[in-house]
Length: 260
View 1 (tube, rainbow, N blue to C red):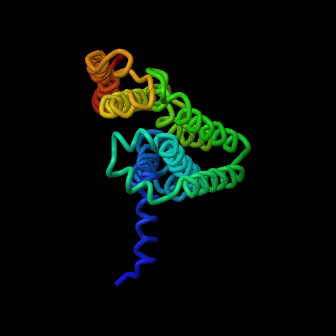
View 2: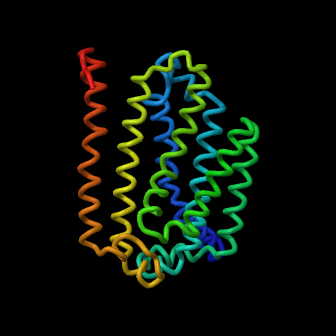
View 3: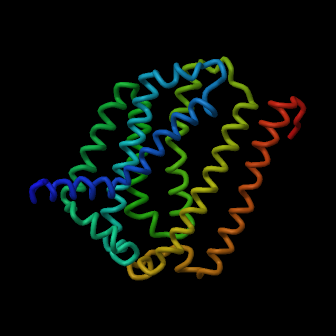
C-alpha cells in the first residue's frame, strides 16, 4: 500500500500529465515520425534512416517539449475558464500549483533551447519563435475570434514543417519534385482544416466559460448558428485536399495518368 505522501505525489504526477496532455504529446510524436517516413521524406531516404536519425529525434523531442510547455501556459491562463467548462478536469489540474506549472513551463522551454542550439542557430530561432507564438496565443490571441482559431491551427502544423525542412536539407534538394510538394501541402491543408474545425467546435463547447471571461470567440460574437455554419463550410472544404490526395496517390502513383 502506498503511503498518504506517496499517493499525494502520484496524484500530482497524474495532474501534471493531465496539464501537459501527455496523451496528445505522445500522439504528436508518433504522427511526426509517421509523417516523416510516409509523407515528408523524399523516396531516396530509407525509413530506418529517419527512425535512427539523431537530428530528427532532437527535432521531434523539441517539438514535443514545446507543445507540452504550450499546454501548461494555456492551462495557466485558462484556469478560471476551465473551472466553468471542465470542472472535473480543472480540479485534477489544480493539484499542481500555478507556481509549479510555471516552473515546469520555463524548465521545458530551457531544455528546448538547450537541445535545439546543438542542431543549429536556425533551429534555435525557430523553436524560440514557436515558443513565443504559443505564449502569445495563450495570453492574447485565443481570446479573439478567427485569428485565435487560425493561429491555433497553424501552431499545430508548424512542427511538421520543421521536420520537412530538415529532410529536404538532408537530401540536399536533389529529389525535390513538385509532385512531392503537392502531396505534402495537400496533407498540410487537410490537417489545418481539421484542426481549425476542432478549434471552432471547442469554442462552441466552451461558450459558457468564454462568456464569463470575456473571450471574444466566434460563438460569443456571432452566435452559435453562425459558428455551426462556418464549421459546415470548413468541413466541405476538406473535400478539396482529399480530392487532390486521391488524384495524386491513385491516378499518378497507381495508374500513372492523373492530371490536376
